[in-house]
Length: 269
Image (spheres, rainbow, N blue to C red):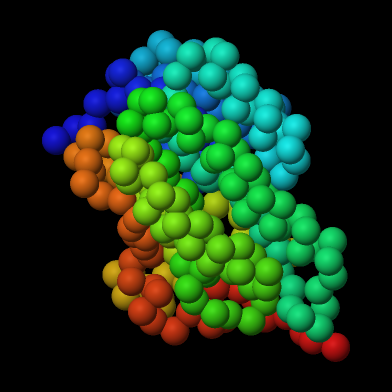
């Protein structure tokens, strides 16, 4: 059954690139009215244009930094003022870091936690009243790094573990009010995310992906579209009795040796 979102209003954060872009485009293809949040004005406008081309529905573009209270306030206010309601929220925006306890500093910690945890917490609490009214749902985008330990993933993996627990907590709290909360945890995914955290050239990144692919039990790394399909499934009425779940989209990588595949090793002092 193909999900139908023609009567739905969905907010997607981190929609200007990567997984968020793929999620936005699939929702647009299925007829959803969209509020798209990102920090890069040009990229966000490009994604919005492509979404509009799917069904002729013009998304609301919100340029905001969700690591800040002002960014969360603006996102919640603009979305509700524009649409008057909300039926779905996809918390996808996130930033990474590659460090370890010998090299890290509190600036890195604050930067990653402010976006990946505090921003999700702050934005979600503001949107929950509207989601209760619509009996809507939340899908949070985590990572298998939230449960898999690897050298160099501090503090990113901590934020994803926190996000997983947050999702389960509010799923329990909101279930009696008719709001579902689920989490999608991608494995190695083709995107610019790893390249932004490393000094990889395009060729080196392709080699890294190939190394990762060989260790994935199903033999394939993820794409943004793979993650988007699971997000849409969990957000659809086909998942009406699904809440509090953490669904891995990783080809089985979590059950294999993750270690050096997830992060390039960092030299310590």
